[in-house]
Structures are given as C-alpha cells and as structure tokens.
Picture 1 (cartoon, each protein chain N blue to C red):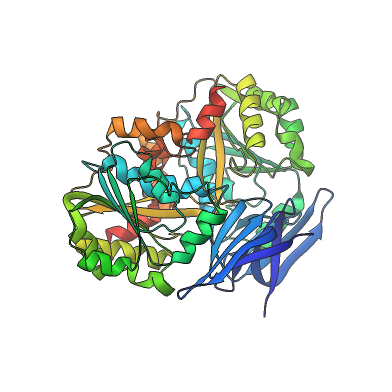
Picture 2 (cartoon, rainbow over the protein chains, first blue to last red; picture 1 turned 90 degrees about the vertical axis):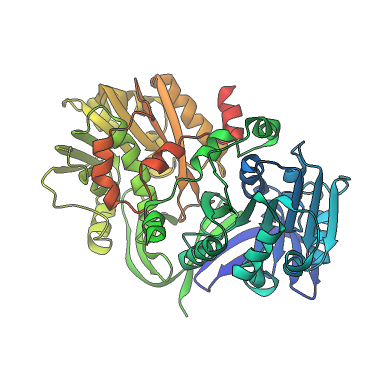
Length: 278
Length: 278
C-alpha cells in the first residue's frame, strides 16, 4: 500500500495524497523541493511540505494566473514572470502568439531542475522567446534597466520563506516601475476563505500602489479549501475589456478558462464586497 | 492534542480535520450520523464518514443550492425540498418573503435530530410555513397528490446508500410531475473535477426529462476538491431571467451569493463545454 503524503495547514486541517514514489528530494538554499508521484493527482511538486502544482490540476491555476491579464492588457508582447519555476505559467504565456519576449526570474534553480526532469509536460523551456534568469525577482524589479513590460505576472509561493518579500508595497512599487504605463500586473493572492486577512492585506497594499485593483476567484483543487484568488492591478486595467482575438487564439488550448469564465470570475462574494467597501 | 477525523476518498485522497469532541454518533436504519466539533470548521455533520456540512462553510453550499432557483423561477411561493436534513437549505428558502409553504421530505429522522440538537444555527425549524415530513422523497415525488410546486430542491447525499435513487431518470420524472409547468428544479450535481463521469451522467439524465438544463459551479471548501456543481432544470428555466426584487430581498443575508455571482456561475469550463457538446 502506498503511503500518505499530508499537507498540514496550521495543525488544523490536512490534505493527504497517496504517493507511490518520491522522484526528487533536495534541499536548496531556500527550501525543500520534492516531486512525488501520486495515485490521484499524478506527479506533484511539493515545496516545504506544501503542494504547489500537480499534473492533474495544474491547468486551473496556470490558466487563471495567465490568461485574464494577457487578454486585458492593451498589448501582450513583452512579459515578465517572477517565480513560476515549475514552468506552467511560462507555457501559458508562450501560447499567446502576440508574445515576443518572456523574462522569467526564478530564485531557486532546484525548482526548475526538478520540474524539467520530473514534470516535463508543464513547461515550454525550449521556446526561443524565453529568457530564464535564476535570481532574485525582488532585486530585479527594483534595479533592472530594461524596456517596460506589457504584463508582469507574480507566480510565487505563500508569504513565508523566499516568498515573503513578494507580498507588500515595496515589491508592488518595483512591479509598477517595470510595467508600461497601461500595463497589467497579475498575481495569485491567496485563499480568501482560509486566510481572509492575508487576502485583504494584499488588496489594500495593491490599492496603495495601483489605481485599479480587481480580484478574481477560481478553483484550485490541490490547494487548501479548493477556492483561490488572483488579482489584476494596473493604472487602467479593466477586466471587461477583453481582446477577443487574443482570447480566441488560446481558448482551444484551455481546459478551464474561456471568455465566459473570464466574465464570471471577477464577481465579488458578498462578504468580501462588504469588507472591501469599508 | 485533538485527534484527526479524515474523510477518505476512494483510498486515494484524504481530508482531515482536528476535532475536539464527538457530539453525536448514532446509526440510523440508513447511515451513520455524527456531529464532531473541529478547530477549523466549527461543528461538522458527518454521514457515513463523509463531511456533509459545517458551521464555517455551510453558507457556500446552501446559498448556491437555494438562491439561483428561487430567483429564476417565475413564482417562488410553494417549495419542495427533498433531503436537506441539516436544515440549511430550508432556512435559505424561508428567507424569501415570497414563500408561503415549504414541504421538506427527509428520509432520516436522525439527521434532523442531530442537526436540531448540535447545529441549531443552520435550520429555521420553527417557521410556521415549514411542513417537515420524515419519509421517502422518492416515493413522495412518485405518489403524492398535492398542488404543484414552484421550486423543487434536491439536497441529497452522494449516490450511494439512501441517496442512490435520487440520481436518475425515474426520480427526475417524479420531480417534473410535482413541478408547475414553468417551475424550476435545483439539485447538487457532484464534483465535476473529481468524478466527471458522474457529473456528465447527471446532466444527460436531466436532459432526457427536462427541456432546459443549466449546470453551475461554485466553492464548497468542505468537499473534496473544493469546487462543486449544481444544476437548474425545467421546461423553461433561463438563468439570466433573475427576479431583481426577490434577489434584493435575500442578498443582505448572504455571505457568498449575490446577483453578480449568479451571473458568473453558469459559465461552463472549457473541457465540460466540449464534453457536453458531444
């Protein structure tokens, strides 16, 4: 019988998967990186004991991380990804024919190594439009002298360990510095059900830096509570202003996202609407 | 240290909650009924080892089970609920001022007993508009000679044990017999991610009995995979035809549902759209 691998949340809840083997297990300078093979979710990337992505459910998270920003930005030619070491976000960005260059800044080379070796279906590592940089995304957005990006995507872990600095006004100001004036920033913004305060803190910090902030919601079966949030932020971003040609170009590759889904995900749950109106 | 109570799904996944005490534990003629007190979800109703509802997350499930049907039906005066023994569905129905009579047919008196005693916040058991019948909902929809209902809601367990007969054409034909010609039937239709075949089977069975079938989707943190489906079915039901006055009357009581949410939940994920088009 296969063993259980349990993700334990604050010693109050646990979510366990039967796993048949551990394919990768290394300690990087930043975190423990594992890939396990499970009976229900396929191969799963695990960082510091937290399930990050799986072969079976990764399309929910990655399609929702990428496509809403890519179809609402006025242009989608130059894209910066901070984090995203498993490759799933990069692959969805590169599915857009409009994309000319993607810079991906991932701090942990072992996440890339593990994903290339054991989750090869997730990434598009050989695409010539991709420039992969192993380094600190926080320093990059603060210091890099490059042309502005049309879209910046933060695909990071929870705000602990190396991900901590990716949540907060300083990082968001760096992102705004990298963005074209009318560019769009997209980020995962945690579970509004399990940790509402963190979700609200992110919204308020974004609102201090960006004139427009639009949270959205969707399924993430592998994550605690199953429902997750993301946010679009920018000087002018309007979730209803979808570029139909760009959307139509990627819809055939999508298992979850489409324009109908995109119209629905920005609806605010009643309790969050009340709290954000305060 | 509190113990774990794990719901195990097909011996492949488990979802565990720390619980501090077991408040109720009885074997009925149909199933084992428990109420446990957990550290993260409050009190939880458990049937045959499966988490049914909790104090902390019940609003997602019950608001989504009730309000979409109640605001799209041409009238919402007479309502039949099959199952729903914890009382949460009944309470949401009774929040609609238009409601004159609710008949609730629950097969298992112990579910009602456990819920009244240990989850008293869920139900509205003393409302004079409620007629509670302990009995077989399948027989009721087949045989009862009563005036037609404006809305019928099936709030049942998974299709095992006593819930098995609640999934399938015979039961759906009974529901149609009970409905006004333009009435609306709402039911939970399982997880489209964890058991897609069951979801598709339900859709196809409904389509054999009802001219219009509209699945919808939403969060259910307590349930496996966290994303759940429901379906509206009827001769004429149109999810976009929302009665604004009825919706406005219940929105202040809602923690999740509202009209914006209602506009979004009927969007079909891309893979389900392809499968249902076959």
